[in-house]
Image 1: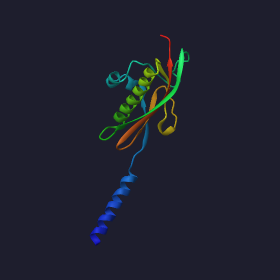
Image 2 (image 1 turned 180 degrees about the vertical axis):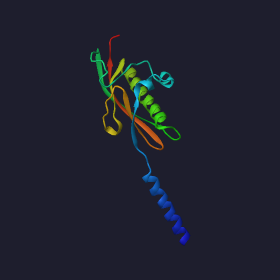
Image 3 (image 1 turned 30 degrees about the vertical axis):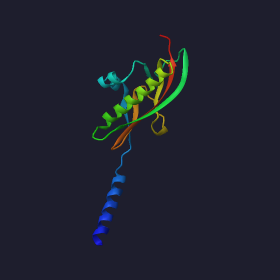
Image 4 (image 1 turned 90 degrees about the vertical axis):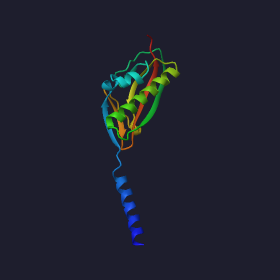
Length: 146
């Protein structure tokens, strides 16, 4: 009987320790270096992306604001590596939506992790933990005359 109590107590302590050590870090990473990488060139579509205030203000038509929230497996990856994959997935989702709606560009792209806006022309925000990493973005779909 004492051994079963010891086992139960040990399992409970292990569960509490695991919960206390769960990570939910919020980090910021460089947009330009990611966009210039080989993995970005392979993953993204030919739909221009404009971040924060580095966005055109004149366009033919506007679809409106859309959002995306992409997660990726972070197990055995650095936070940077996992966050870059999540960011590329989120950017590609915005590009695919622009194409689907007949728009040419995505402007005013901002991070929106856990509904906390972060606007920067040079950085994106990513949440990372021991198992998952995620990027949430908002952007406006527009058609710009070429």
